[in-house]
Length: 305
Image (cartoon, rainbow, N blue to C red; front, top):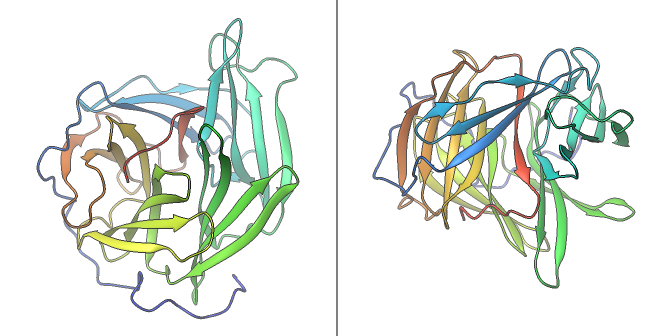
């Protein structure tokens, strides 16, 4: 159970009714077939997978590997995984993952195949314990400018009484300045869509089907919550977002009950005026037992808000 107090922020994201319709598309948001996202997952066997999803919509082959990174059935809540090319071939990859009750920073270097590791390159650095089933979502956000850089970690934690977004600032000496924001008990899932010097912005769905943006400051202040749609978004257990164009987002919603995924082109976040275009069902199946994440290229910032 989460022991952070019982206060809920009035008027934030409280419980609502349940709608059964699938999310509807709206006017075009400017996405083209060139927009794509690199989808990853952790399998029940502790493997990583990689698959390219494009806005057509289309899906590349799902490749499994590296294998056996984590114990069978123990890994969950993976954050996005940052990658960057290494010489002469392969990639260095790094992200967060919960294994059992513990949070780790996980990293490895792949060989030229992209699905096998360079021997000796796998590291799992313990961050902290206490990651119970009340934690539903984890994400990391890195932002760097000409004279400024930051890294923050976020989690959504929900128990029968509370619903919190939690923010940490990552420093050279560990995770610091832990801050909790109550009022988010009705949130079902989230996805990071915007990164700035002073805030991060998430898309959030509620159990009642509404779609919101939640702008969380990286310093002082409270989150700004803005409604985008009132209903029909409750069917997705996972949202994955990637930069699309100069100001937009390619959004993948995964329904684990059916194994289906649907793509949306989302314009720059602007409350109820936000443009959302349904691109269609992705022609592949998304295994319900996997935990999904985005591979993000180092130095590329999301700009959907």
